[in-house]
Each structure stands twice: as C-alpha cells, then as structure tokens.
Image 1: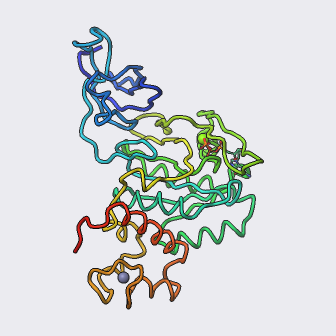
Image 2: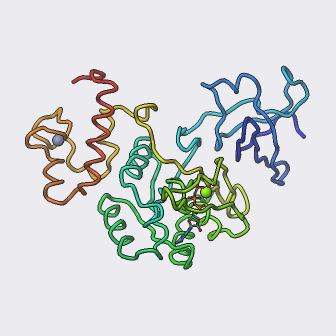
Image 3: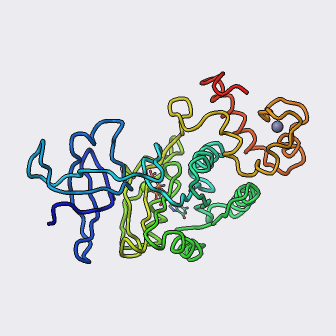
Length: 314
Ligand SMILES: Nc1nc2c(ncn2[C@@H]2O[C@H](COP(=O)(O)OP(=O)(O)OP(=O)(O)O)[C@@H](O)[C@H]2O)c(=O)[nH]1
Ligand SMILES: [Mg+2]
Ligand SMILES: [Zn+2]
C-alpha cells in the first residue's frame, strides 16, 4: 500500500471503521481505526467522511489508521452522517403509524442543512387511502413524494430511477425514518444483493425493534462513482432539547412552504405564533399550509425559544 491514500468512510462500528479506497483502479475496503486525535468527541470521524488513510507513525506505530479527516460539506447528528447530498425521509402508511411531527422534524433539520429531501411512503399495500392523504400532505408542503410497497413491488422502479440520478457521480443519499417503517426492506427490494437484516414490528407496542444498529454507506450501483446509499438505524424522536439542531430564528426557514409568506406579515419581527395579521397563520387558516405542519412549527418554536429566550433578540 502507498504511504497515504484518500478514501471514504463507509461504516463505523464501535470505533472500527471501514474505508473504501481506490488503489490503481481497484476498489477495496480497509478496516482501520482512527488516530488518537480523531477519537476526541469534537473531532469524531463519521460515516461519509472523506479521509486520508496511511501507516500511523505515533501511537499504534505501524498500523493502518485514519490519519486525517478532510473538510465536510455537512455533518448530521441523527443519523450520524457526513457529506450527505440527498435525504429520503421514509414513513409508513401504518405499522408503525405515521408520526407527522417526527417526519416534520427530520425535514426541518435537512432544510436547515441545505440537504435536498424527498419523501418515501412505504407499505402502501396496507392502505391505499392513507397513502394518498400522506402523499397530498407532503406534496402540498413542496416535496416530491414516492409511494412504494416492498411486498407488492409497487413504485420501486420510479424510486430507483430517482435515486440513480440523485447519486450519480459519487454523490450520497440516505434513508432515514422511524424504526420499522421498512428502510432496510426497501433497500433489499431495490438492491437484492445487499441482503440486509430486517425485523418484525412489536405487536405489543406497535413499533419497530431497532433492527439496523449502525449506519453504513453502500455503493449500490457497483462503484463509488455510481454513488452511495446509506441505511440508517430507526429513531423514535429527534430531541430538539438535547441537540442544538437550529435556533428559533432559523425555524421559519426550515418549513419550505412558509417561504412565500416570510417578510409579508404585519410585523417585521413576527414569529408566526400569536401575532396579529400574520401571513403564515392566514395561510394555515385558508388551507394553503397544512395544519399538522404548522402544529409542528409551533411546538418546535416553543421548545427552541425556551432553550434560548434572548439570543438574537431583534
Ligand atoms: N406490509 C408491508 N410490510 C413491510 C413492507 N416493507 C417492510 N415491511 C415489514 O416491516 C417490518 C420492518 O421492516 P425493516 O425493513 O426491518 O424496517 P426498518 O425501517 O429497516 O427498521 P429499523 O432497522 O429498526 O430502523 C418487517 O416486518 C417487514 O417485513 C411493505 O412494503 N409492506
Ligand atoms: Mg433497518
Ligand atoms: Zn407571521
């Protein structure tokens, strides 16, 4: 092996990474750890990071290690991923029941990070009617929506061609959503050779059982150049109290259908919550913004405002 070689981190489990490298036209995965200074919490290497791998000269001398992490375009806390270009927010028609607030939070975080987001509604075999209303909800918010059933093989081709275009040229996409919505099943249907583990829905609590335990990037069209798709562990909530995803001033910009109204309210410092003659609230009342989306906005506004009441007071 050459002394130093560039690569992409494709998996991370308990401090052990796999880095995809291309040596003289041949792609291979190198299992390795990160050098000491990259193990600190504030310098943690993430799946998706572009890194330099080589022989470590300090610490574990002579071992292959990640020596350097290159600058990132973006980094996410949930799911833990760097350099993401496209997010597919996955939710199921039922089993588990869709939780609009969870999807809205994920969408808000992606908007804030300027990561293009597409909606995937799974398990349409369980209720075509529910699928339609969810599709209408997210289309009205300005998102492209795909409705699929891994069981019936429906909608798979349309999603596959969107994905192929989205990640061509070595770009990166991820499936994210609650546990049990069928992310891994969908990846298996799209790319049968992956053979990812999938899990049951708990009958008792109606939720998934966190079958996927780690985030991994797959070069699903064969090579790094064809692009990467990540499967990620399901999450039950995105904790805006614990993590600093954004500030309350950022929040209105994280709801894309609010955009035409921002700056048109009566008060220039309108927070779109209780103020009179608020253009956003008027749009909700007139059915141009979905009530569930606005409810999520208000609940996140309350949480963020309580966290940081005075920051950036206008
Ligand atoms: N009815 C129906 N069930 C599905 C479909 N796709 C997946 N399932 C079922 O949903 C359950 C969960 O699927 P997974 O693919 O493990 O879900 P996941 O989103 O990867 O879950 P985590 O890894 O825990 O985050 C399994 O029992 C699947 O058989 C579908 O299209 N229709
Ligand atoms: Mg899974
Ligand atoms: Zn307003």
